[in-house]
Image 1 (cartoon, rainbow, N blue to C red):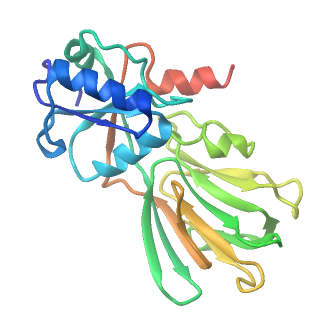
Image 2 (image 1 turned 90 degrees about the horizontal axis):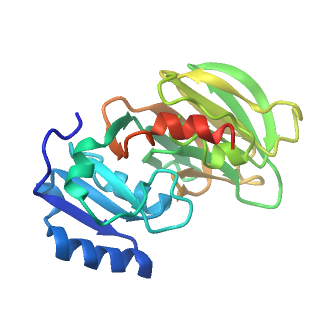
Image 3 (image 1 turned 90 degrees about the vertical axis):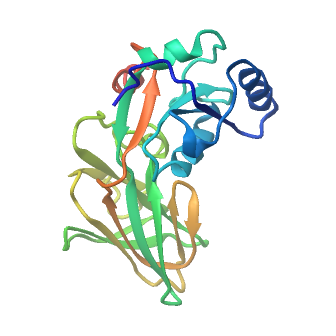
Length: 258
């Protein structure tokens, strides 16, 4: 739940960018510093990539994260302002998002797991297009997709890689996931699907030796994948704080009219 009092224990974390490091120095001098495990709120200084790193860092802790943009895009970040930070944290709106969990097996038979706040993507890793079979809840829905790849995105991640691949922007409270093709060749007109949040998506890689495929969970790769299963993970909740009037729902809506 949102903060009900100005926090005394704030953990500041920053990317390695000089702008973020300067902000870290200034803010810790002004407001102090504590360990993440003892924090009432974590303030992340950087861009969207660093925000994802921070959320993964605290994914087993019940702590809210408030981002301030010291990076580039900053879709998940708030404006950088040094003044009155504790009061701004109290007035912030909270969005709760669930990540995706991925289970993948490689050609050596080794299984890999990962969490993804934005998306899990399967991408061709060689000169030839990938060939993927797509199943939803155990039923084959597409026997063969010839493509550069495909991805499953959360609503929070639907404006990222998913949107660049011409996938839909998904409202935060919609209870759906976006399944999107990346540069599909056959079937040429298939762009993807909207699936219930509880759906389990499985990709089976056809001819993985000649057409190798890499799986990425928020850009953390698993090479030489033969299959991958993706589902929403309801047991992990990420709490993100936004300035009033600039919450995640508003940002997703605004992005559609940009």
